[in-house]
Image (cartoon, rainbow, N blue to C red):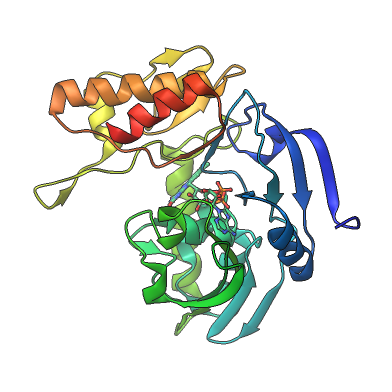
Length: 308
Ligand SMILES: Cc1cc2nc3c(=O)[nH]c(=O)nc-3n(C[C@H](O)[C@H](O)[C@H](O)COP(=O)(O)OP(=O)(O)OC[C@H]3O[C@@H](n4cnc5c(N)ncnc54)[C@H](O)[C@@H]3O)c2cc1C
């Protein structure tokens, strides 16, 4: 373990896109598969962090050991197959697929994530999702201390969820393989990538207005998916703020850190949003973001958010 990069009492501010300050007791940066396997075999209940683009870290800090996967960034290509380590950046995969004239990863161009994070969350956009062309993944199962190969069926993908998300602390995605579509031309792929990036510029905050993506999942009522952002907007919450966290003006399902927000500020905004939307529409919004921390007051509020 000695040779693996390790920091103690380390601020995770640069490792979450909300830019919340959160001091972690122990942070590890594995650079090879052997290193992460060694960490997983030796650390107790580690927190796995990709790009931190969906994680709300507690401002009170993180006691559990943290493993940052970003340096695990190897990709192997055998068209139409792409295999990649968990830490590969999603936009890089979109560009690589485009260069190979492969379709299926266009939506990743606009998501500031790692591959492992997109699989755990079953990230998606523009009617595409990471589950669409998924073939298999190499997954560490902490409950059996074993590495397994998971098929798409084993992954239990659903809307913004997977077997990984449903079993916190149990599984770690090490790598995954995809079979993409061989397209007739590069143009349609490039146009779809440009469209997704352009649409985001006009509707979502950039990372200069730090955020962790959509705070809530889009609810489903009577078999119809409803935009959570629209409900929040219609409940009159655009611009609502608590401390340094605020409901974003252009897209109400984003909560931005506009002034040194703490995790408690973010949670307070979420709770206010959830209650107001429930009062007005009788719909209970469910968090999409993941909370990591052990602060008693925050956990109490977080559990209320999850239970609704
Ligand atoms: C500006 C912006 C736009 C966004 N747009 C979208 C969008 O269009 N669609 C969408 O779905 N999401 C979107 N998101 C949210 C976010 O990018 C996704 O949820 C993404 O999948 C998270 O990836 P990550 O690598 O940052 O994961 P993290 O935020 O680091 O982690 C998220 C969860 O996955 C777990 N995890 C991460 N890596 C692994 C691994 N290797 N093995 C097991 N568990 C792991 C973590 O423990 C955590 O529970 C957006 C976020 C931002 C900031």
